[in-house]
Length: 486
Image 1 (cartoon, one colour):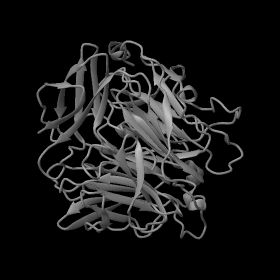
Image 2 (cartoon, rainbow, N blue to C red):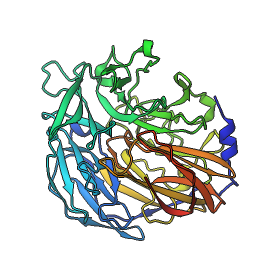
Image 3 (cartoon, one colour):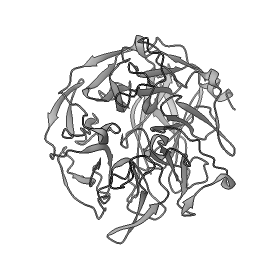
Image 4 (spheres, helix red, strand yellow):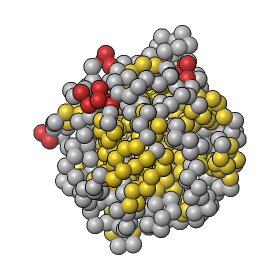
């Protein structure tokens, strides 16, 4: 392990983060067993004012759009009446510089075209609707010389299997653009995916698809998976990939050790596994770093925790990426904690300290999907969490934080947001690195500006390794929002 880079990044200590609850229109994720999982949320600036809106799946309730009016004020906006939704992802599907939506459902999936003013209307983009599967995960990437994205859909239990639900995981699907439609590749076997992510984990210039799977329903014989687009097959131990067998529910990816490769958190029932990058793949982090969050840290319930959405983000802007995990019992599973607070693990130079209770976000609701993003444009990351059978919660970051740089990428062609790019940012304290991806988490995500905390610094330099492997020059950047143009 390389911890030296983490020490270089250490900034002057800031006070522990503080969040204040924000009142928003009521939204509840609810429903029967098909909505025990899911409950995704996406933050997307659908009207171009740099204040992201929130779009949340509702299960048996309709999908909700909360229009961001500024100063952490949200109003319910018009939205097509869609129920049965498990997740929401936002991306530009047709290269018109406006984000569209992919709505995952227990049933046919739905794609919506954005109009740039937070209006969305049904439009199929040539994308199949998933044949009525129970879709619970999504990711997207742009392959070389493609103007449209390659899409991956993760499916859960096959509801039509007569011997289900145990041992009846559905297959998954990759869609590659071809002419006016998409060429379908079935990923078989499937092991009940609840989170998937395209990422260039080994930094070879090619994104591969990681699938985090729920052994509750595959029971035995399954594991986490990795699919290679160039080889058109799953990777195996012979390729250097050996996936653990867990109750996989979410993926969070970011370089936290300074070796220029992404490290991982895989949420589950039980330990939230932290996997650190190595030259040949990933290895389990030492338990002593404090990120495994295996049991509730407050509330008095000593049974194992259930983790869902995980997100890296520098909530105190000190230059170290902190870790948020949404927690909550599946429903009434007796072997798992019922009072299961969210985690906010403050990164202090490579070890993590739990601060969610003092920060004010240790909710005991059944958390599911989440957003960690700057919702009010003040340079601090705010938080929204979808809860099962309880209202959506939103918190404003009001803590004493350092400075931050927010970087948006723009390039010509179909992949205008440069998904797949790597951005380096350096100050006198050291270098940080982030990959721009779409997917992972739990059932929700979008392409947002990359947020870098820089402590007390006011200036920095940034450079971009663009998706076609062209290396940009170092450019001076200042605090606030910056657009880097190809």
